[in-house]
Image (cartoon, helix red, strand yellow):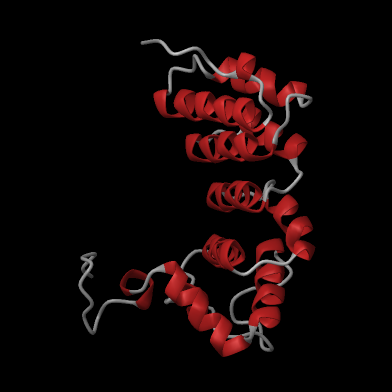
Length: 193
């Protein structure tokens, strides 16, 4: 299978079509409310690919869900573009999913929709073994935490000196975002240059 950007008869839609195009097609096919409901159930694990009354998972992913977590990730991607506030509990549950890819998309959803799940995200930032998840958690805190979230600020400040430079930069950026949103320049990390 080729991973080039050019479409071929053997290329699954997952590689040929951007996420936004797949989600727009799903909205046209199912309707907004039905898509959001299905995505919430997939993300929370209350539905699985192939459930008799649900649509084909290829509608979201462009291909079969080869790994069990893939449908939950695609559901999260759908919720980035088609949202209803009742999906927040599914996102909160996904922050504790066994698969890191699902936790990462859940943190992205927290950031994108500005969900008030700071304690869950701080836990993810502190304890997750996967740097991608921790970076997404730092970004989510940058978008949602306030100066009153002491644990979030403390954890981000400690990560600024993390040996993982990507994680350290995400923590620094998050502190900068919090400082900017709340007019608190004292929270931002001083420039090293």
